[in-house]
Length: 369
Ligand code: AGP
Image (cartoon, rainbow, N blue to C red; front, side, top):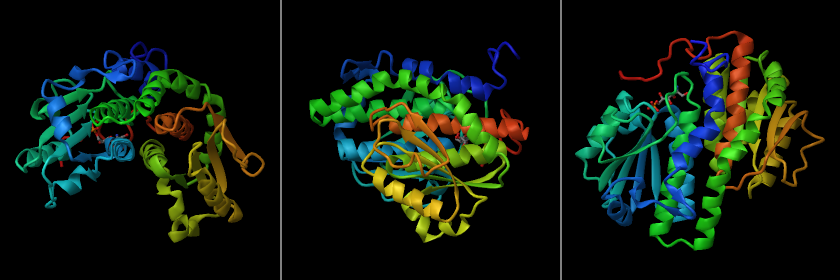
C-alpha cells in the first residue's frame, strides 16, 4: 500500500500532488498552439457543437461544481446559454428542453446512479446529443453517452475528489475553447485563454509549494466546529467546493456562499469563533469582495484569505491570515484557487485524525440512489 501511495501519507495527498501532470496529460494532444484538435471529442462532435444553441449540464457533488464553473466560462466566452443542475433534482422534474440543446454529464466514476438516470432520461427527451466528461473509460456513462471526453486524471482512490475535478475543469476549458473557435470568437481572446491553459500545470505546481503556509491556517481551523467559505463570480463554486471538501473529510460543518449574499443571512453566524475562508482572485469583483471581507472583520470573524500576489488589494494589514498566490489569468484562476483549499481540508482532517481517504458514511462512487 505504501508503494501505491508513492510515499505520501494518504492517497488524497498523492492525488493533490499529481494535479500538474494530470492536467498536462488531459490537455496533451488536444491543445495545439491556439487550436483544439478536431478529434478531441468524436467524429460527429464538430457538427453537433456547431448546431448547439443551449447546454444543460447535469452532475453530482464535486462534478456539479465543475459544471458550475464551466457555466461562467461558456456563457462569458461563447455566449451559449448554459444551465447546471444536480442530477438527483433534474431526474425528477420536467425540464424544458429548447431545440438544439446539448446535454452534458460530468462524472469522475461514470457510475453515479443519479447522473446515469439523468442521462437515460435525456436520451429520450429530445436533446441534440448527449455528451459526457468522465475519468473512467468504458464506464456506463462512457458507453451510454453519444460522445465521451475522457479526463486523464488516472485512478482516483481518495473519496474526496481532487485531481478529478481539476481535470474535469481542464476538459471543460478545452470544450469552451472549441466552441469559441467554432463561433469565431476573437483570435486574440482565444490565444490568451489557450496560453493560460498551457501554463496551468506550472502554476498548480507553485500553489502546492504553499503547503506549509496552509498548514498554519489548518492548525487554527482544526479547533472550530463551523466554517464559512466565500467567493464571487466564477470563484463562488470554488467556495462551495472548499466547504464540501472540509465537511467531507474533517466533519467540520462548512458552508460555501457567494460573498455578496452574506448580508442576507449568514452574517448572523459570524463571531470570533467563526473561521471565514475567502478566495480573492485579481478580478473585477475584487473590490466588492474586499468590502464583504470588511463586513466579516467588523463582526470579529476570523479571516483566512487567499489573494493573487499581483493584485492591488488592501488586505495585508487588515487580515491576520493571508496567503499570496502566484498569479494566473482570470480563465484558469478558479482551478488554481481550488488547490490550496484542497490542502487546507487535508491538513485539518489529518490534525483531527479522521480517515482522510475513506471518510465515514461515504463511498467513492454512489451507485445507488
Ligand atoms: C467529492 O469529493 C465527492 N466524493 C462527491 O461529491 C463526488 O464528486 C460525487 O459523488 C460525484 O461522483 P462522480 O463524479 O463519480 O459522479
